Every structure is written in C-alpha cells, then in structure tokens.
Amino acid sequence: MIQEDVKETVKEGAEKVKDVIEENVWGTIKDFLNLGIHFKTGNTPIDFTVGHLLLVILAFIVATAALRLIRSFITRNMDLENELKFKSIFKFIRYIVYVIVVVITLSASGIDVTVLLTASAALFVGLGLALQDLFTDIIGGIFIMVDKSLSVGDVIEIDGKV
Image 1: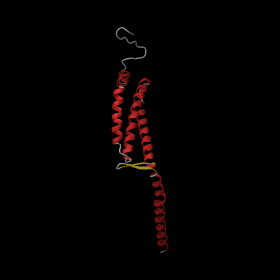
Image 2 (image 1 turned 30 degrees about the vertical axis):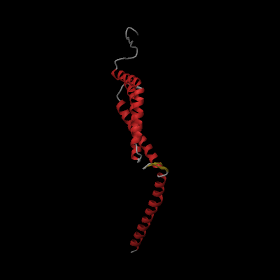
Image 3 (image 1 turned 45 degrees about the vertical axis):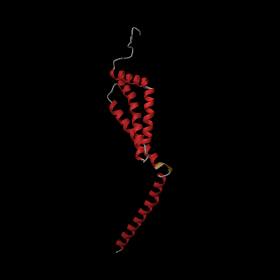
Image 4 (image 1 turned 90 degrees about the horizontal axis):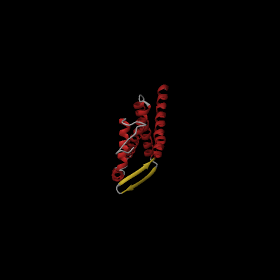
C-alpha cells in the first residue's frame, strides 16, 4: 500500500515536471526561435527569425562538411597537379552549391523565392551577355587544364607570331 502511494506520488511529480518543462523550457525556446522581423508584402507574409537564421547556418555547415568530404574522397589518389586543377574547378562548384542551399533554405523557411529567382535570372542573363567573352575564356582554360594539351614551357605560335 505504501509502495503504491509512493509510485503514485512519483508519477504525479514526473507529470508535473514534464508539464513545467514543456511549458517553460520549450515555450522559451520557441519564443526565442520566433524572435525576428515579421512583415507583410501584399498578401505574402515574410518572417526573418532566429530559427530561420539557425536553419541557414546549419544548412551551410552541412553543405560545407559534405563538400569537404566529397573533395577529399575524390582527390585522395590524385597527383598534386591534377589535385590543384580539380580544386580550382571545385571552387566554382562549391559556390553553385551554396547558392542552391540558400534558395532551398529560404524556400523551406516559408519565404517566396520565385520573385528572387526571377529577378536574379534576368540579372544573370544581362551579365551573361555582357561577360560572354570572359566566360568563353574561362571555359576554354578549364578545358585546356583538364585536357592536358598544353604544359608549362610550351611555346604557342598563331599566324606566325609567338
């Protein structure tokens, strides 16, 4: 009989502790994560909260760790010259992955990214047309590095000129 009373008292105490933790601790954490800037543009509410910021930071940490793991896995058996070439190309890939991570985390946070993507697409079309020669030279340089058709010390002659 005494054991049953003790069990019942412990059970009631555990329920009270659980309620206090759920209400006070988790409530405080939720309130902290919801701190931020809340405004509305047209019919679309936009929220920049601590929780969204932490989500973006966590996504960047995971993406960085995954990219480092992939880079080390691919370059572990490469000679130094090929490893340096791969790392220079991999930097470009890393920036693309980071842009994708930002877009996905903003979308997952409830922010409408269609306007952002539309505006950036128009901007990048203009930049692409303006920098077309630069991109052509960069892509050509990457192909020369990967193809190994030229090496240090080679002399190039075009139209009789060195």
